[in-house]
Image (cartoon, rainbow, N blue to C red; front, side, top):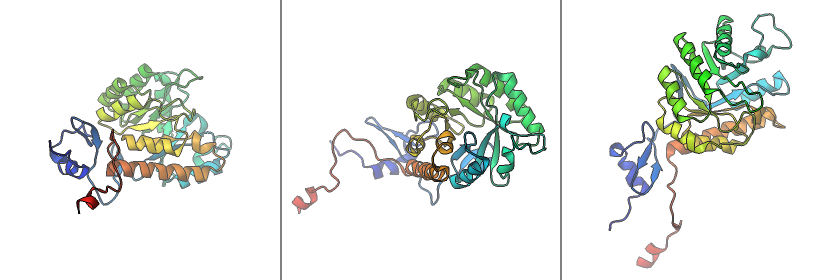
Length: 300
């Protein structure tokens, strides 16, 4: 029996290996090893026709003040910021109680209107149209969760709203349960991403839906953004190492005792997780493997 090929040997064979969809997962009889094509700099996130350097999306709820939110957004390095339309003044009158848009520089951040609060497809479509008519980008984070206690997304209404909004020219980023079948249906109707939850919104419980998200990632033809439930930078890094294209974080940053430092922590975690994914994680082994083997010493 010959020796098993090394990680380096496997990388040399990547051109003729069987790939898992568009992902860099080399299948062998023994294991599944993630590798990647090496590059001089990290790859960019592409959603629809736009490219982004940061793979961290940040929400704007729950901050103690708009000033705190503004500073945390800058510290996070994010380029995409979600805003619930019910918290924004779209009249142009700079309502002091709904002036969140005054604190988000549209030249620095892509403003992603959020249909949070919509109870059905009609609600969500109306909110998206209202945002567009007020001059906001034709991008929308589609959220429909009729249950106020668990805030779990409604799959039927989400798909229905996505179909309408895509036909009207919106770039649609739907928030969904970690449902691989729904993710494929949304891709088929033209969603620009799919955004499966790791755990319920604001729960800080991390990735409780790992197995389903891994299937979504394997089958995805659009970027996969892990959204909701990420409570620690390590959980964001885990999502990136799994192969997610980006993550969205809000609560964990907003309620931190120092939102700026927490925002930077998530920024670094996302970068580290993506870097590790692109480099290729070491394969798991059933047996130990000495880091300083002595066989060469004895043979000489």
